[in-house]
Length: 230
Image (cartoon, rainbow, N blue to C red; front, side, top):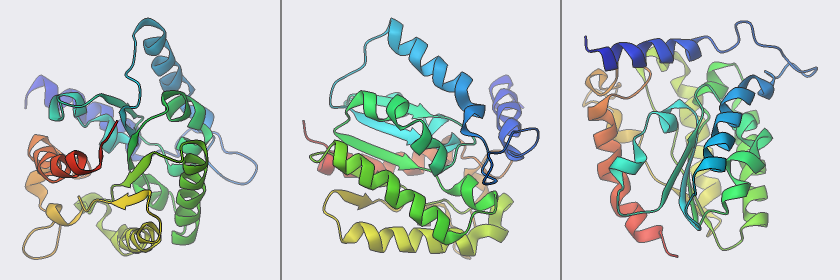
């Protein structure tokens, strides 16, 4: 096992049981403030470095965070604001910090995985998604928003029926709105038997390895070419 792989596994383990030791709000939600340190790290980076205008913003949970988007899409102005363990409601809570301030031309969004694993219902997850995209469109009516569906993984295979239902409902919702898009990065992760291809995941069987991200890059690249305009 390489040092890089070990580091990634240790980092991932921090998010496998997201409710342990984390405060909850009065309505039972995990407190979004648990991510304050990560958000402040983004703000500190932005204070010292410039970021591109009208960029492609990748935002969401750890599948975004671990995605080496700058290397994958070097010809585009890319910003990555993934923070591991986050749910859609967390992105909404930190909307100004991780979306609003960048005024992106295109958002590529992945979240919902942790939501279902934390026992949120399909209806709650879809409702959170609708609220987030409504806010985004209100603020940036000329921008586009791409939903990356919740991925199938062996470690959360028991949750797949609910996750798949979220994906289907979001896809149907997006198809009725010209600014919303659905890019299927979930199906390419399934093997011929219809179960997750474990060779595309790191040892935790939850997060993608380099081969898994290569599959995502191959599918996403032509989509970005078609959707991104400045």
